Length: 303
Image (cartoon, rainbow, N blue to C red; front, side, top):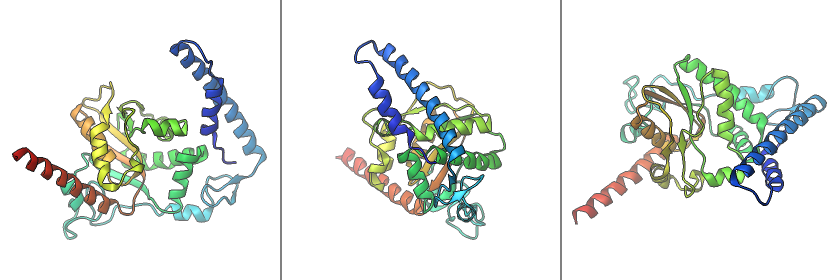
């Protein structure tokens, strides 16, 4: 059974809140209702799992003891792999194919600020549909599956070299609309799997921040650089594991790594569930847009 709990959860909590009382009392009441609902929903989901047959996350076919069926598992195993002549940071095709571990053109023009950026899958069918179901439909089964697969991938790459986990924040409007923070829920499971502390409020957005998904490619770098802020967290000298859901232009990773580096982070390694098939082209487009803005500002300053 596939549950869509977060939208219903938000509605029930809002209906249960008292119309009067202090902000602190309303907050305590909200947390209590949320805890009771989460427990009841978990019991109901476990009961449905026992009574109803499980379904594949991709094709909805019946499965016995796995999250996806055999055919979908074969498709999902076609992960983004490090190629022989790939960039030593983002693992995209390098600028000089005859020079191993050379940087790609986008990393030369638009550095991400991280040691490596690795993605589990390409953002195409069926991964695209699964991620949308998880982010916008509240599919918690997909969340657990993503957390399990990404934990295995990270553990194989890092081998216990991270001190803490930081996630790319969601815009306040998007969190209110969904009723929860899907990336944060997944990172909490990854934190338990890797035995590494997770700080959900390490990075923040103000209320006026616009969602990245609503912006064209050229405006995403500008939007991220202007609004993301660092919370009250001591990260000096620590190795950071930075996690995001989908890498489209690298703007979120770049803005986060810039703040974390300024705060004294020793090393930052980024991981995402998926990346756009046009990731390198999108980065170049965003880079050219940023350089155009800087040129215009320079010319205006000379006048």
